[in-house]
Amino acid sequence: MAIQVWKVGELAKQTGITVRTLRYYDQLGPLKPTEYTETGHRLYTYQDLLRLQQILSLRQLGFSLEEIKQILASGKLIPLKLVRMHRERVEEQIRTQQELYQQLANLERALTSRQENDRKAL
Image 1 (cartoon, helix red, strand yellow):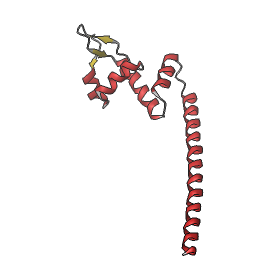
Image 2 (image 1 turned 135 degrees about the vertical axis):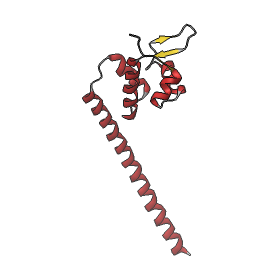
Image 3 (image 1 turned 90 degrees about the horizontal axis):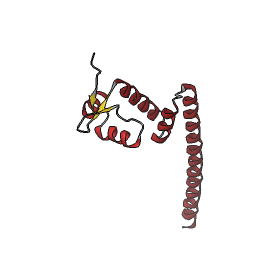
Image 4 (image 1 turned 180 degrees about the vertical axis):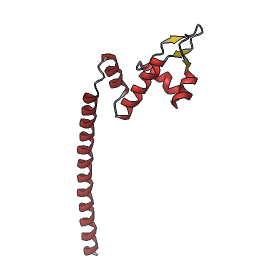
């Protein structure tokens, strides 16, 4: 039985990922093709496809490629830990956005007060 393999363009078409992105993942390391042709073309297997799906899922959760590389290299893809990490990240983003909101509200009040004072002075 022959093992199903895809060239980079075929895998891109199958998954909706660009060839450029697949090459980038290869260069950075989170997704190295299992095989190469004699002429050096990348050949991806079903296992590579599964790994790509993990990468895409982790990217959607907000993990950087470097973090994904570390997670996959550890061989310990623990869903609960990943969800907690992502929740903590979202909490930090919320705190940052709340601080920005407060700064903008303060600035708006200061500008409104100044505008009213300028009108009174006229």
